[in-house]
Image (cartoon, one colour):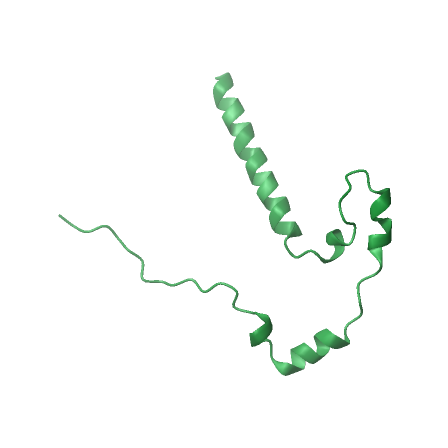
Length: 83
């Protein structure tokens, strides 16, 4: 009987972190412009979310993708129930 395949590949996450940023890149980062003061618009949002998060939140696109995937899964589940 053969053993199940076990990958020896190690996936390294957070390849770029604050401690690994090269000095020239870090200098450019510190010289960069501050984000616009979008947080002053937050009180006018109907969903009560922080307006600045839509401009600077790096997890925004992941969350958006995740919501679409969950919705697609739910749609498929509903479609299977109909059949």
